[in-house]
Length: 380
Image (cartoon, rainbow, N blue to C red):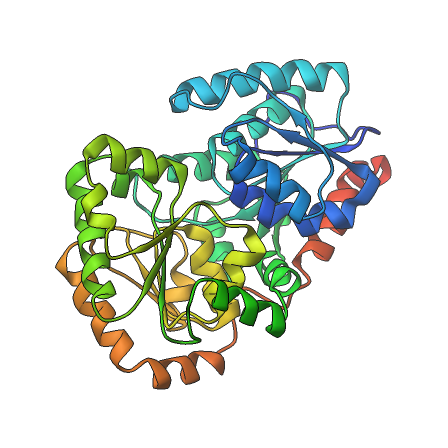
């Protein structure tokens, strides 16, 4: 059974949604809209700059957050400690009715620990993800949060099975679907806007590759990043490769002296979420190490090569949308193979439903979260 430092007790305050990265903003946006004025948005500043967070707040129609200070740029332990200290003070000054966190970031863990320390009901959105790769800091974060949460919102049956396998408290587990389905449907630009977008980059539908790389395993060393960029360059010899570059990746390219490997790629700065979806919708192939793209590709009906050693989202693999690939020659070889049969593959994926639900996840999660703040229900 879930164990708390203090027994969770409902409050009458607003529901604190704690996040710290762009993917969390994207995934929690529909839930924040469902909760409406009951939302108290808290941004830890784990990833805060205008390109990666500020513009997404506006694009997604989210309220201005309470922004913590001195968190971004620190190592993992420092981020968690700085966030936890400030969240402790914030929750002491104004006790939330519940705390909502999503996924597996350092902000997620800090928000969960702060809620646990104050005995505030804790909701974990996207509970039950498991890569079974203990070299991933995110795996530790998500496991710890699941084990102290009062409401575990699992996106898929496989996520539910993972939670049950760890003997978590059965009444706290709810199959809700994934908010990514409704996010993609709402934020995808219409056909006319997408045509203008592709024309801006000189691209034709189903005739290019869209690539993103940002995870430490692919950027921390010159060997890893060089391998990815080399293979993207080989792909670009035959098929245009559009490469919106994450700030971490740009810094790594400069640090490792890898600028010459960008010569064949069409490199841009970070793009808005709607713009990324519009570009992904017409790509013949996606190449990425992003967790979110593994989900988004299933809604967009696009194939994805996941440049990672492990994944916590096997559903996209099982449904035929994605596969794991090494960053070296295997990436280039498999990309060539998938591009060669792109028409057949795209037709097949267009007819394959997303494994992430029916687009009503945020409605279910909002209802369950609001129930946690009602004393009569909590006491029952």
